[in-house]
Length: 90
Image 1 (cartoon, helix red, strand yellow):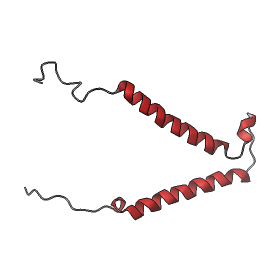
Image 2: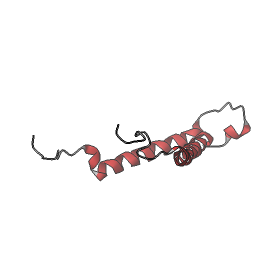
Image 3: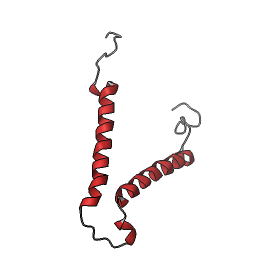
Image 4: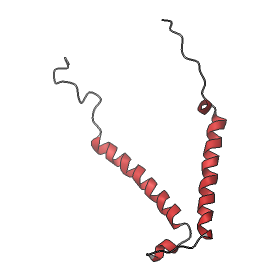
């Protein structure tokens, strides 16, 4: 076998395509946030009537999950050779 590297380029390797995806996501999120004002809400709690409540709540909870995962990583992280045998002969 030869030692040649696989020089294929994929469509996500181009920064312009990644930027297009990010901007498309931003536009969709903004449109959904704006759409919150165009339908009737039957809410149980008063706070649910706030414009964009579910979008804001979802964003805050997503950020909270990421921060919690970073904290859990510090607590649960093990050394690279944690599962190696005590004598290292495995």
